[in-house]
Length: 234
Image (cartoon, rainbow, N blue to C red; front, side):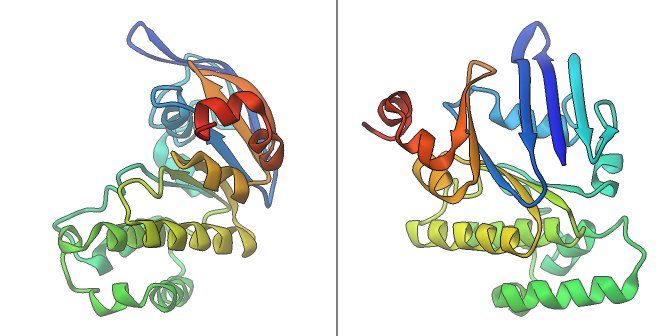
């Protein structure tokens, strides 16, 4: 479904990604792990068209989308749930969800998906007229996920979804991501909680200094001595 080959990205003269190549097959849950500054978030932003590629190719469903903008990427079926949630704080919950489907024109389908979001996250239904900025961190994460789902994505990019959440909400968030994948949406996950990410995923890529240094199944990386020592606390 998604194939990235030889991707280079820079911030000014600083290289953030170097010759990055990864693959995400349809129906998979693939995770990227690595230290802060390894290039994980940049990878997702490059896929979303937010950060330009200096070299390399990004292909989605057989189509080269390397230089497509964020609007075109969303229209092709890729949604991005960003780090820090980034809801629109002065807009209501309902308005935030409406922003997730602003490219759609199927009113009946939008209404159906909205009902599904409210069934999945009842607190959002209860607070639909409340400003998003007044929600708790966990509620904002639910809203960010709901907003991404309102676009009916075929591939959803999650960037640090558990960041800043209470432990009980972290578990809930991973359960939601697992459910989304079970419903047929392909997932590419960046996650600081390496152990949880590796337990959840089909395959994993380890990024270090903007390059892929290891790849394999979640269990293979859980058993890898370097991963254990550097990312799992020994």
